[in-house]
Image 1 (cartoon, helix red, strand yellow):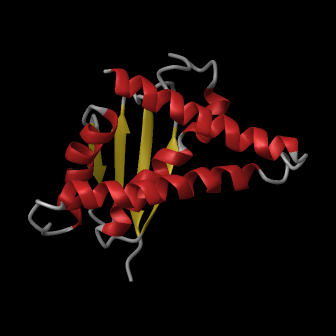
Image 2 (cartoon, one colour):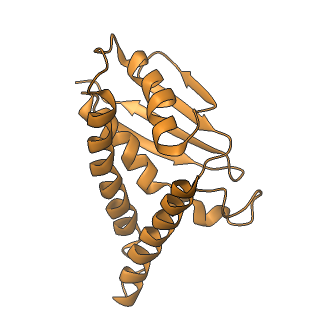
Length: 161
C-alpha cells in the first residue's frame, strides 16, 4: 500500500518538474506539447521494460485482443493495483480502456474541478501503455480522455502496416 502512494507522489513530482522546467525557460506557451511529449516518452521506456518483465514466463498471444486483455488485467494490476473496468473494441484495431477510478487522478478531484489539468497527468500513462504494446509488436497511438474525474478512458488505435 505504501508503494502505491510513493508511485503517485513520484508521478506528481515528475509532472511538476517537467512543467516547472519549461516555465523557468519562459517557453511555457509554445512548449506545452513538449512537456506532454517528454512525459509520454518517459512512460514509453518504462512500459517497454515492464512488459518484458511481466511476459517473460507467459505464452505467446494469439491476436491483438489477447494482448489487450493482458494489458487490461495483468499489466494494469501490476502497475495500478486494479483491473481496467471496461474494455471495448470495434474489432478494427481500436480499443477503449475505461478506468472508473484511475489511481493517478484520484488525488485531484471527484468532479470537474481540475478537469483542465488532467491531460498532463495522463501523458505518462499513455506512454506506459504504448511502450508495453510496442514491445509486444503492436505499433499504436494511445490517447486519454477525462470527462468526469477520476474516471478516464484510454483509446488505443493499432497502426496496421
